[in-house]
Length: 311
Image 1 (tube, helix red, strand yellow):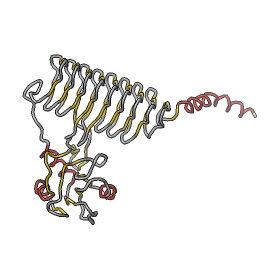
Image 2: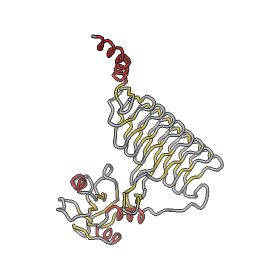
Image 3: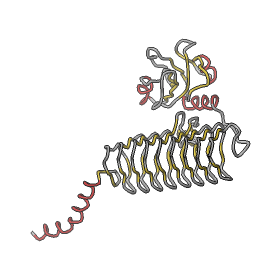
Image 4: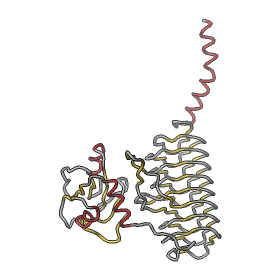
């Protein structure tokens, strides 16, 4: 998430009441998670295991819970609770805006787009031309939708990320300030849920078609002309490349890449990166040909054991 204007690190430190290391006029342009940071961004880290990754990332401001040596060309914000202070910044720069109407007056809707009664369109939403938004669809704040998009009844676009930190008293939610972006010619079935990014975008690219009852997690990127069947669940921060097919009830763990042209047969558990153009099956996933050969041999195992005992 980029700020409306550049701030100094001293100004940011004042907002969250913490110390800083670096030039007081060091520029700060936004906050982002580590997988999408660029120069000018703040990234937070609160575990020694990830200090080096954060300090050596593209982020130039590190919100950290220990005083460490500051890398050249960067600045530090020293906090006793970086998770809490990252939330403070998200809330400060993108506060919750309550809805006052079914279709927000700040929404921009293209020519030829039809919105059915009982649909909700949030603040600062942009919808392109010749789209169809069915009944009981919720399109939450800052979502961007291209041309010729169909969203069927009951779907929620832009729900919060499922991202929590465990505290002694319970779970603390990381606030979501990102967006959902649907490109041209995307179709979304009934009762789907597509979560917005924590600070960046959840993106579904041109021509992808999604069936009913599909969950897409925060900051996931789905490529062009993919087919995703009913009851698929995709976790956060997944990359699905172009022309991928996910058949019914496929489950995808976070932080994996499904390569271009891959096919996941029904109920496959995607636990690791795939190879381009390969068909997979099973949990954990394996190439379907080797899986079927293994199953054939397993069927012959009782007969083999019986003959072996006779000897």
